Length: 108
Image 1 (cartoon, rainbow, N blue to C red):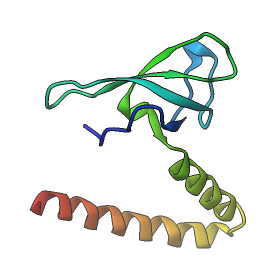
Image 2 (cartoon, rainbow, N blue to C red; image 1 turned 180 degrees about the vertical axis):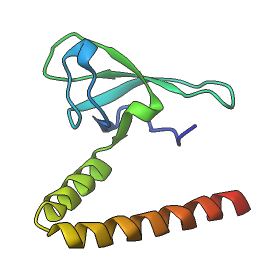
Image 3 (cartoon, rainbow, N blue to C red; image 1 turned 45 degrees about the vertical axis):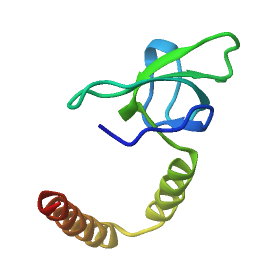
């Protein structure tokens, strides 16, 4: 379960939601939180997309903070400017960081 997003905060979609014709990065406001028991994903109701009077219900893994989305997009812009050899180096470094993150979580 990811950490709870406070009510009425703005969030970005972490992935496309084709059933609603919504794309990753679209912004909405959390209007309801549905806490679930341990091991299950919390749910949220979102409003404020470019479609008026529509409430979309999603799991917590489908949304990220607007700040995180903006940071990810800025990183992608920079990555697109790198050569393929530099991208390979970045990929190796990301794998290293993910291994460290996994090890840290296992210890905690």
